[in-house]
Length: 94
Length: 189
Image (cartoon, rainbow over all chains, first blue to last red; front, side, top):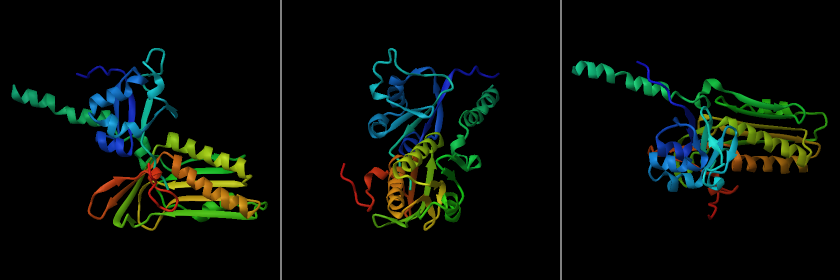
């Protein structure tokens, strides 16, 4: 018996975000208004907003998006099924 | 009855694995990943293999160039006097390649460069080996020196690549470049 796959998007975690979630990637139910992304992650990983996300950027596809100024989600960006999202902590190349 | 329950439960770990395979950007088999702009003569590469400075220099060589600057960033064996046993880098190529290409293109325009190479090694990098290579060429040394430093600093500030240092005591920490300046001094937030 195969279960029906609900629509999801992929979210990747790096560095401190990966450590906090214990994951490198996972799928989350789509669609999801971008403005609710941090709230959703906070419900899954209590404390992540203050300890990790407050210093992170977020990308959707290969573009950065502004999660905090996206407003109340009405008319804002919506993460769609199959989209690729990444949580980008402060970088440390070189 | 109980055996039926067990057999139903068994596929779950497998399902979980299938729903979260290793993402492609963490699979060394999907590297090297490169971006080249033949017009600007910029070459970006992310690789799990050792970096090759000779190859980097050959890419930017030009009869019009009077100056070729090569920078190799190598992994250091300590952080704040704590011995480091291992360093490992992770990248998110969809953003990192784009960011590095923009840095290279902007440097060509701003400094009139004849070529730029930015290469970064990923995965475990043994102490003393190169994690980043920058090579730039220009007609004269002033532009090449300035551009080389500027490109490196912009990479460290912006490229979507992360360094994890594992200390000899086994503890590991993700590093953040914004905490340190070019002399390794702590930047006050």
